[in-house]
Length: 201
Image 1 (cartoon, one colour):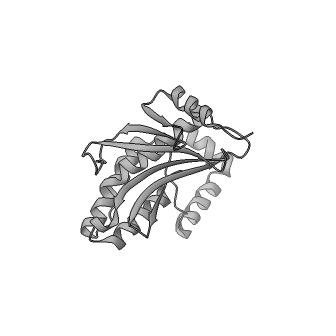
Image 2: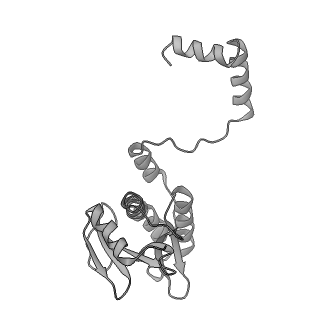
Image 3: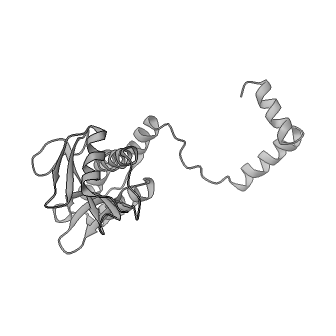
């Protein structure tokens, strides 16, 4: 059995965020405050996330429409490259471009099929979509206005706040040899582990 609109509204109500439900448009609009992103329509630091059921309740979509209008930026190529770089960095949300009018949206799709989304799942998706738009906005705007793509500041800020380890780059051949020599000198992996424990590492 697919998810109903009433169930969707109930899940969002359980989360406890500000929202407006429209059965006519089959969507719930959730208001979220931001730190960096400024709504181009009202100049407020906020986002409107549109949550909707599609395919007769078998697909859930979270969408932030009109995040950017490409025609308002001089360096569109650099801006698109920056948005693709963000897509590579994040797990859930994606920047998408409507090439017919230059509208950039951020979307998150979740197949439900015969299941329903929990309030915990929905809350996490809403948080990640809003976080993506807000945290990467400065870097994307710089790319669009100057042509410079630089994620150093935002990566440092995100790394400082996140509790999860960043994706580790593969070791160089030299690092692999040095690690193998270290393991051999310690008498194997267990020997190395004991040695590290003895030194409180």
